Length: 350
Figure 1 (cartoon, rainbow, N blue to C red):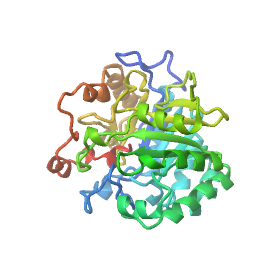
Figure 2 (cartoon, one colour):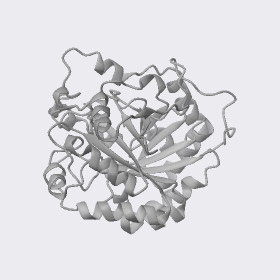
Figure 3 (cartoon, rainbow, N blue to C red):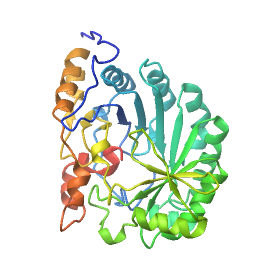
């Protein structure tokens, strides 16, 4: 099999038709999860990706190297729940050796984090983002069908002890956790973590999403402003999805307003599913199969050409188009999700 190497970085930034560079790659390592959150995978049973189709760590590492040499310098490990993938520190160790990667992070629900945080840090993981939608165990049990809230909190503590950079994500949903905004921000400040509030998104379809359930960025700022006083927006040159703000005491938090104020024009990320489908947009109808050329002897240069051609032709702005929809509901009907698991939020890596 030919694995002819590419130059370490492109001669010029690889940009799409809207002049957006390819700099960030989210890598799903599994479509399975040990929670059933209402906004992601609320059904009891799902159609799982065939196990034989799941990329090996070596295949993921090879693709990461190809993307890195095309300009990607940020990797984020996702799922499903990535810590359900056995021996995950081994993958982190491989990815850490990629010379072009400056930031290596992971998103997790935190349930298994306490037992793995130290090993992940030792393997080279820089940062971890833990999903924490509520500080109330009873709410988590009702909303995510999990009684393991205490283990999530233990995971957060373990991540801090291990020296991992720490962020907390909360999807804010009306009549569920909108009354916890102040408490969640105070909790994050106590643990020296950056809190990020996320508007409820309409990806997938099993969630029964409706616009009335969305707590907007303006509402979040209004609630926090009543408690803390003046909130100042922070300027940033980064293409990260969160708008960042500072409280009067210097506490920094972020809001991802992807439903009411989409960030499509500054989206520099692609998503690699656990079975090697590369999605150019979270809302994309389909992905580009990179597993087939990977497993049929195509060289790194040939696979890179596939990636480069697709990115240069990219004009996706799915969240913007969704925001313009007059009759906006869930993205897919439930039966279409069962027919194609690649349309599920947990398969796409969020």
